[in-house]
Length: 503
Image (cartoon, rainbow, N blue to C red; front, side):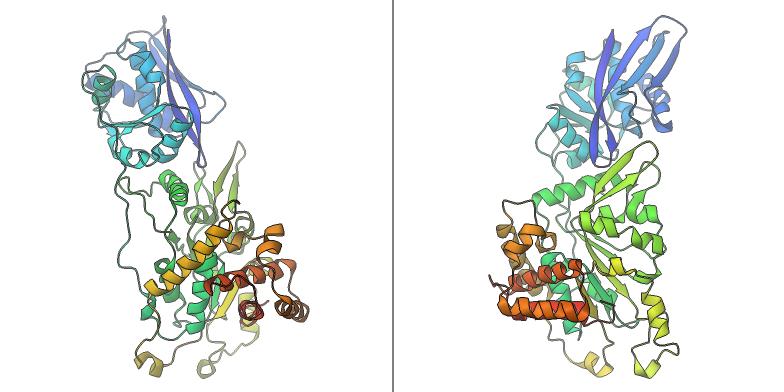
């Protein structure tokens, strides 16, 4: 008799079906696992054996073979413990095979039979729903998986609870979705004195999901402005929250099953490696660009990042996904993020401050900003200078709008875009291209004439030309204007050519 249980193997955010087959045969006693298992999966036989022993279940003196099908798909992770145990218990006649085959199971076993939470419960629940099966997982992962809502999720604390459930002794209740985690105490935009132009650029970037570069002397407020960006972003939609949480589930970032409706805000240090930013390493885990999916990736001291790391951002920025290529497989992760970068104008940081003028200007600034390649610089929709704020201005009362007021304007602009793109794959103005750009971002005659003169005068690339139109469309949406006028084009152009950053 061959008993079968079902689980999943993760390839990026995709959960592929794996059939766990268990067979017992005469011969020298042994317990082997085949089907390209990694070290953690191979060690499952010892954990399963000990867990069954703790329940006073002894394995017969036969040859036990576990096959993980398809055999050519690499299997990684400790979540194979539970399905292996289920297939083994079905082979022993302890559990009904039909009930086991109607369930996708994942979970790690302790030596005493306790089920330990594992990564990836949310994408596993999505895969179970597609296969028209229920999901069985550890109690600590149940509230996370229950957010899918399209399949029955059963969460058990121990292997003994699983046995009693499938034998009808004590039925387990379906798991319930955990409370939505919500961040509190966000820094307020009203705390920022001065920097009105930078705050305006931040609002435009938030409204259209545009990439933003801030250049200014040390201490001028670049990081402080970026820290207030999460407070003005609209909450995630249900679909966006599910997409983002699936990635965070694989990375182990979901806290006790709670799914946050706040947009992710990731800020890696400039010493981060390429696998940390793009993804990779053991198991091809998601990097910062994917963890920032549907949110913000803030990169402070942007020119200080390794050149190879910066150049790998070019393709994810354009396509909204990143492909991690390995010798034996390719893993794809979504990464539709808003890049916010901050940089000093030169190595010492004071090239633009007369009182502390850089002794190597302008070569110092050219060399430092030259670390950002032209193709990467071309991908920033908005570039804004952040000059130092005088001490006299710091003593004045702040008259800026609060984050709540700015967030309301941003949300109104996003609602306009949701209505506009309702029947299309586009989500916001940053996604406009091709025919959609011609349909919804066509300026009036005066605006087109101005943009044409700017393109000739400053040598805008085709990408730069289109990005100006996207920003102008967002500015018009903030003004609740259906038409794209000359003043919208002029403001968008000012953020393209009126900065220390090269055009």
